[in-house]
Image (cartoon, rainbow, N blue to C red):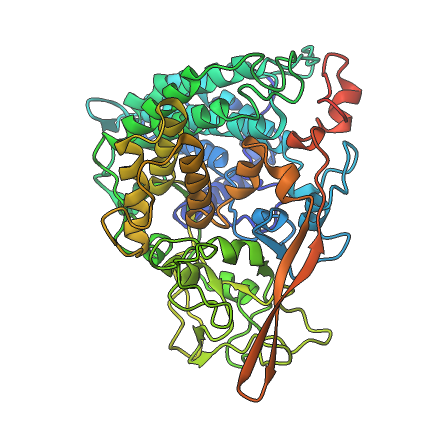
Length: 586
């Protein structure tokens, strides 16, 4: 049996922080290795290696070493906060751009179509990264059964919960690969050694979806159940609801135009289904509804509290991080001496314009009351909690985002390139003078996403039914949209196409900067429309007390259809594997 490294390496992604609840365990692992290094007399293997029999010890009734190995699988979870070259992934969509936008900036490379199979930017070149996580999961699944763990959960050994957790993480990592590349090689439980033939072909897209869904179905009843009996210790762990929500999201993606009916290479089973089926939408709707019917998740009363509240009823699965003010110091506006910010994320005018009025009517609706000379008045409250705009309250002042203002001084200082800063995920610092640490856990699966997924899938399979209306209304009601006649600004009797436009926009607003928009414009096949036009900002000129608002081009983006709907398989993977077929156009 070859030696196995007991590794907690987080790869080259420096912005991924070790989960705080694991710190003591990581330190314990280091202590074990230190003791081993000191016991030369008993050393049977290199001090930087630990044998598989040591990790999965037949005499370890606590399962201590095996559990440490499991935490190493969790370590591959991405922390989306400024993870892609220090930017949010959605800064490569039509929702934002990087304030550090230069040709070599990672999200700018993505949004300007400046990459190929040789030069995929590091922050999104995740093929090997996720396969490393899948390999660790397979090692755990194959070996945990020998560990005689005495701790129990609902009458069976806790090791079976751990095993299901590893399988959940593996399924999630496969989903991350499939949404980037289409069909990928499925390894099953196989752990390859140096003597094995690893020139594996890609499995079809359909096979990958079937595998991920079957894994979620197989493990859901052996995961922990929400609400957790010990939430402070366990709230980072996947539950039955997490497995069901992952299944629902996978089916939603699979039913979407990119893979279902509008495959970029119509007869190619690697890039999507080779036929269209409306039943795929129905299956996605049923899976989303199954999560809702658990009756353990609910929308929080306040939109902004979703990102500042631990263990909330809206959290389904999160990537736990240390509390800090790093989001503010990285993305907060410039111009404050007592609270440093470098304004990394510049939301676009397109995103700002997508927010309706508080009545729920779009700003383009003549009846909405929108005033272009006072553009932020009486808007959807989510705008205030998502974007910092001129006059918004922040750090005991009203932001000056006009040309030459304190937070848009121009010159060489990094600052907003669009006239806006990101507000989402930040603490309640409207009336304080400094930033303080707060919850910055990364939401991987949350309940609002399930509700919107249900509305989308049901609308596509059955039209704008009352159930679709009710789902969208629940999101708008929580947002703070006025009830009006009871439809919260929604027109009665909408067609499927009209409701589709509403739902797509609602996802854009509700899920901004959560790594959804970047993928949504791909799965809906609208990226070629929204990205082949300049991303816009606002230039505000102040003369006396008068403000003039001018929409300006901030960045020229580009999307090469159809090939860029999927990433290229990394060139080195194709080079070393004669059975690895490249995606079309690359």
